[in-house]
Amino acid sequence: MILKLKTSTQNFFSFTHLILPVSCLLILSSCGQKADKTSSSPPTSPQKIILKVAQNSNVNHPYQKGLEKFKEVLEKESGGQIEVQIFPNGQLGNEEQEAVGVKFGILDATIVSSGNLAPFVPEIDLFNLPFIFRDLDHFYRVLDGPVGQWMGRIIEKRLDCIFLGYCSFGIRNTWNSKKPVHTPDDLKGLKIRVMSSPILLSAFDTLGAQATTMSWNELYSALQQGVLDGAECSMSDLYLEKFYEVTKYVSLTQHLIGAAVMIFSQKRYETLPPPWQTAVLKAGHEAVLTARQAEEEMSNQAFQELKKRGLQFFEVDTQQFRAKAVSIYKKYAPKLGGMELINQIIDQ
Image (cartoon, rainbow, N blue to C red; front, top):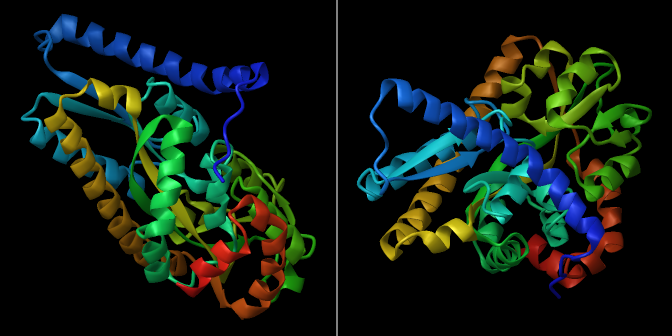
């Protein structure tokens, strides 16, 4: 069953709240560019199309590598008639705001994590079930297969967008500054920030942690000030965001492989001539493949760098964690396609 977004006044104002920051920042960006061009360069050809794409992480993140490939391919395929401008570091808002920007045609493209898509596409929490994927091969086999394509069609309907494909924000592990965590019992009492997903909140509560959500950009200071004890994320993020400065112990729980989605504005897509529409699809495909490879390479490099910086890593019996965490499957199954679909993914 495909759920429909409500069109109530409350949802209208919710969307307005999310989209205003993106709109204002893009207007300011455009004004700055016009001022620069007036003073120092000839006017842009009226035939040239400028696409604005954004991602919420820093310029070394795999998302950025993916968007840079998107820019490279699309500008080449269009013979220079399309210019792609990339806005990293959450310059245009958080991931939810970027997704809504794409929905309303304010932003042309973005890469957004499954957790931040869940408010608009609750079904995508299917991919946020802890321990549902065995490894990256299993992960991409599911996402590139019928289940992933079914989810892509739902995303397109909910966000009025073109679904370009999946990449990953990494295999997620659990870390904290207080003590080594070897078993679920060791998590008891620890204040752990988790990805914005009701499922992950439930999972970590079930494991005994005091789970909470928090804006990604506020996490470092919260750890520094002792508001939180730790979090869960990929090796890449642990390294790139310099969380090694405010934590000590990393438990290799590998509880989740994070799914991310690249989307392109349907409104913008429909204004492009057919050859350029084809170019967008090609560039998107190459972008997600580039981001996938970049994430794997970055995770391996980050692991080595983090060890050099003194973090302590602990292998854990993931079956102990899984045995407790999967108890939430039945609770959420009715909203995620049912246990039959969940078991289909597990067995694939």
